[in-house]
Amino acid sequence: MTAPSVSNDPAVSSATVQACLSEIQALALRKNWNAALLAATHSLELYPGADDIRLAYAGLLLELGRNSPAEEALRHILARNPHHAGAAFQLARWLRSQGRMQAMAKVLGDAFGTREADLNWVIRAAEELDAVGQQAAAAALCETQIAAGTLDPRIHALAGTYAAQLGAYERARERHEFALAHSPQALEWHSPLSLAELQRYASDQHQDFARLHALRERGDLSAHARSGVLFALGKAHDDIGAYVPATDYLREANALAGADSAWSRKQWRRSVDARLKRQAPRATNSATARDWTPIFIVGAPRSGTTLLAERLSRHPEVTQRGELPQLPQLSAQLADTPMSAEQLDQAARLYAAQLRQDDGEARWYIDKQPFNFLHVDIALAMFPHARFLFCQRGMRDNALSIWMQSFQRGAQDYAYDMGDIAAVLQGARRLQAHWLARYPASVRVVSYEELAQEPARVLEELAAWLQLPPCDLLAARSDGQSISTASLWQARQAIHTRSVQRWRHYAASLPELMAISEY
Image (tube, rainbow, N blue to C red; front, side):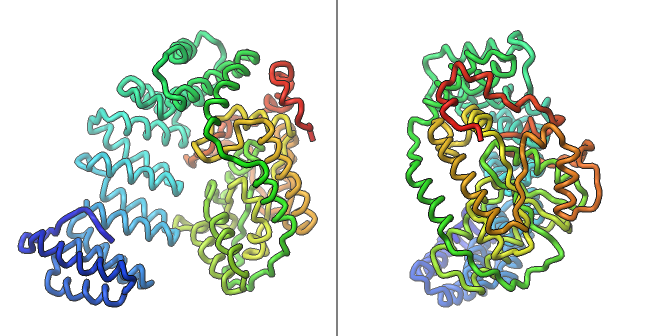
């Protein structure tokens, strides 16, 4: 409800505005919303040009569920002051909650897409857009500042990240190179690893090898920065078939990255057991339209979820939303209380808004959050017509691929230890078998190996099962759709079999991998 500072009306003093805001905020802190709204309304009658009071007024309207007048109030502020950060971000957050991502992108673009915009606000706006899959809009904000001549390495590093997600690899490299040349913080942002992930190396004569080795020798790197350099070295050496040094670099990288991990194998197994024992919730009679179908692509990370989603989304009637956070959030809320039909219906509406959004109509929508395999029962209670594609990969290949990957802090804290990784893979297999037995008409297992070896057959069979109209899912795409997961480079390449039985290259140097059952 608070905002960056003062009114646009020179006739209203800052002290007057602050006094009004203090009264409104005092009532709001006591959750006396109607009284706070009355005070805000009265203040606006006295000082209609006080944008910060109008911002507080809009926040109260949203708190009371009066969404349309709240949006009108926020747009009124932005019409007067297009760069009012408080109004722009509050309106953007509300639009996001409604699934209006295109409208959100326009609001933030209008507010911060100018050369004069404050760079801190630009960064925040870009990160908010990235979080909702609007990488093209986020990239545009950064590129506007770069074109204006900014030397801020944060902007260049962010632009590099978004360019990679959009498949503009040469531009991504240029942006990360700039960040590395202009700020030591680029090492903390893992820019060296970002560079390594933009290609497949053919030889250790590539300039990146010498730079990575030099960085590794430095004694002033933090554990986080050093782990990024080591993951990059591991990836680069794996590319050229130098598997023993790759193992050594990756072992050290995982030890550093996982030093503070509090992930609990016991807690994980308990959560899997709880879902195996949970009674199936009764399906809702949701009023949500059935003329579109949610497709959940699930499975352990690095099991082919991104590859499968990217190929299916080449169909003109399929839209991919990436890894949405809403199903886990809604499932956690529903698990805390008895699941009534009304609660399920409301949850379905909230999730549907995030899945469908405001960028046109499709008939199938993909959510490829891998760990949605924990919530199959709740998803099918909300959407009985939904379909789950459960990706399955050979356990050793899957474990190795997870162990070789640098994940964001706190995202996959099991990924640094082979025993923890094995526990996650085993839990995923148990739940896969459970859901397949309970919902045989709604769940289908997709073999990574079969997809890699016979992509045309596998995709044709899946399309038929999903009832997609005929379409060549192997044809090249040109729509610029972003890929923001760890597989952002691999998923854009032609389907290949190089990663099938890859674990055999590491059998001698990584004996703990051999303790994992292959299937």
